[in-house]
Length: 248
Ligand code: SAM
Image (cartoon, rainbow, N blue to C red; front, side, top):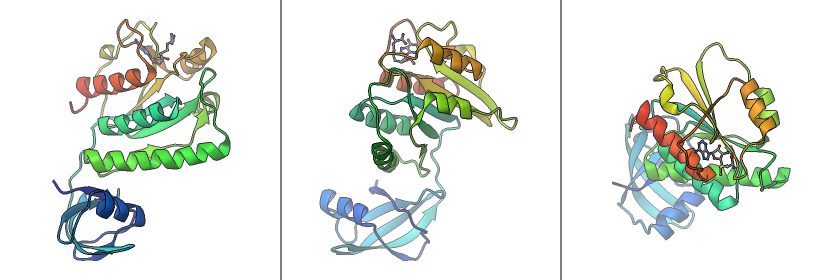
C-alpha cells in the first residue's frame, strides 16, 4: 500500500499539488520516497486521493493527483473518550491507540488526583502536539477523518457544560472498578447514539467527582475484577464496545 499523508488543503483529481513542509520532510527524508513513487493523500473532508510524486525539490515537492476514492473506515460507534490527563508519553499512547480503535472525539480533563498540571500556555502546546498525534495515527491506520481533540478542561468545568441533548440517545459511562454494571448489560446502541466514556487518573476519581458524574447521568461500569492502569482501562473499554456493538 502506498504511504498515506494528511494534507490540510482542498484536493482535486487531475490537479498538481505541493506537499506541506512537514509532510515533505517525512516523505522525502524519512521515508526516502522518490519521483514516480505512489502516495495516498487525504484532507479529512471525506475519502482519499491516489497520487504520484512528479518532482522533489527542497520545500517544493509536487504531486499529481490521479483519482478520488470515497473509502471510509470509520467505526459505526460514535465514542467520545473523556480521559483524565496523565504523563506525556502515556497520554500520547492513549491518543494514538484511541484513534486506531475508532473514537470520534477525545476530551482530555484534569481531575483532583491528576499528577500532571499544565499552564494555559503548555496546555495549548500539548493540544497542538496531540493534534499531530491524531494525524499520524490516521495516516497509519487508514482513517480519512480526523477525530477531534478538544482543549484540556477541568472535570468540574466539563461536567457543568454537559447539557441534555434531545436529538441523540446517550450512553454515558464512567469507568469505576467498584461498579455493579458491565458494558454487556447495555443494549446495542442505535446509529445516532453518542457514547461518552470517562476514564479516571492513576489515583482514580474522588468520591465527589463520582457524585458529579452520577448527577450528570453517567452510569458507573466495571471492566472485570482487576484494577487496570488508566491507559489499559481506556483501550480495553473501547475494544470491548467495538466487539459488543461496533466493527470488531
Ligand atoms: N484506586 C483507583 C480506583 O479505585 O479508582 C484505581 C484507579 S485506576 C489505576 C485508573 C482508572 O482506570 C480508574 O479511575 C477507572 O476509571 C479505570 N479502571 C481501572 N480498572 C478498572 C476496572 N476494573 N473497571 C473499571 N474501571 C477501571
